[in-house]
Image (cartoon, rainbow, N blue to C red; front, side, top):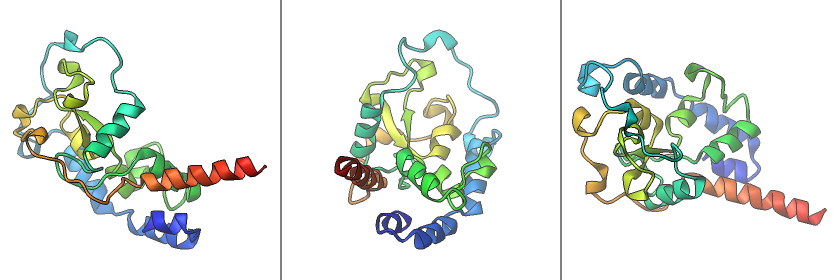
Length: 194
């Protein structure tokens, strides 16, 4: 709703919807998953132990084109929890348009809880530091808690099913990429008119 309001030029409604989505419970949930290791959640008592020289050569993350292809392939949903995720560029549009409503500080508590929790990220099913590649077959879309909560553990170590064993949920959701496309297109037309 905030994206539709922003696209429609209703900045007051956009700010109102953004404030409504800044839900403290999302931060609390995210902290449970991404915070200190809890055996009931992580099924582990400490960080994983692995051969640190297993990382393949090359960049740590795939390029932006590959990331966008993975997000689209996965229907802009976290492959672990099925939550809808949003493109970081769309999040940045909200921050630029409404810095107080889409707050984005240096610490997790200073960041908009909805925008940070639902930011789209790329997860290496076999973690990169444990030998996983940047090949699309090893990459899935993840929300921030699912991405960072798993840490460098293998799926089996935290008793998580391999999300590649079932098809992604696809549909109308676009990760708010329409917000980036339409605003960028409008800005381009304004520049062309000059």
